[in-house]
Amino acid sequence: MALQCGIVGLPNVGKSTLFNAISSAKAEAANYPFCTIEPNVGVVTVPDKRLQILEELVNPQRVLPTVIEFVDIAGLVKGASKGEGLGNKFLANIREVDAIVHVIRCFEDDNVVHVAGGVDPIFDKEVIDEELQLKDLESIDKKVLKAEKIAKSGDAKARKELEILKNFQKWLQSGKNARAMEVEKEDLEAIRDLHLLTIKPVLYVANVDEGSILNGNDLVNKLKDNVKEENSEVIVLCAAIEAQIAEFEDLEEKQMFLEEYGLEESGLNKLISGAYNLLNLITYFTAGVQEVRAWTIQRGWKAPAAAGVIHTDFEKGFIKAEVIRLADYKLHKTESACRDNGKIAIEGKEYVVQDGYKHHGKHKPF
Image (cartoon, rainbow, N blue to C red; front, side, top):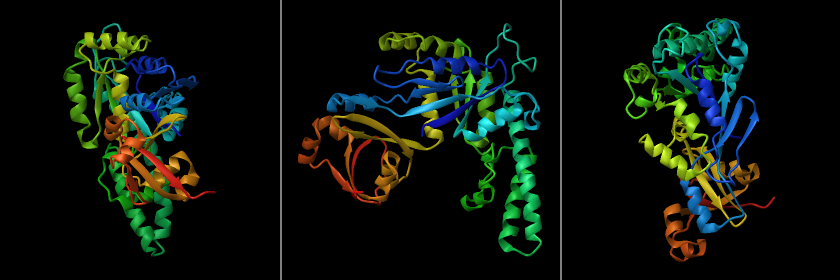
């Protein structure tokens, strides 16, 4: 299943402009898939130059990159946690995504009215934060009541759970997001079933004017200072420029356009890279004459789990994997040449899959 990121933001911050640019972005090559599966869901390919290297070496029938889904989350107004506006739909959609992309206005423009009467990135952030925190508190409060009843019976596990729940309760009441709270990994079990909204990882997108695209501005700096304790990344882009980039079908023309602004890559590419870093994801490859394909997994996964992404039976029957570094494949040109030069490693069940490696697995027959 594709990685799914929900795009959120207040009115007039550039959220729709960015989503429309993403949804109309051209794939890097004609045989890379692109589609829009719903009016509010755009699916784009994950750019990866390593696929092009493998395509040239293997000359497969098709090339399949990984994809990422961007969901244009329903608009939010103050009071969403109580069902105001499209609040319930907004919160339900947020609960389903892997990560949140929070678009925040960091540009001045007298022609674009701001809902607060003036541009303030911290105000924008805190409006949405508050609504998510209130909804999380609602979930925590209900569980605290249940845990208190069980804890009164002297159940040690329930007392420990109650302590953890009250810590989260106090934290959220102070106006902070659950993701910023330092907590032991095993303690997260107490709140796992609540699927807290503010514990989801967030990528902040500072939408700036064209003149601030390279070095940012005071509004961007203000936002970066505010999110430090959350360990969150802030990506600077200009949604208006992204809309123009999306119109280019020719890659050379697109590159020339980027160079005019002094950019090495599009904001969309930065957004995708940021999402992968945020969720600690890596890519490995399988390659053969039928297809060259990229697969997304969590960093630190062992070979059987990585094989399970291809097919669940592969994880159950995993025996070994043949692994080639892409640099070695590029140097020696063919799999047989890599084998002759001792560049194919045989790895077992404890092998931790590395980013950018070509893998070929052997499994028990079913």
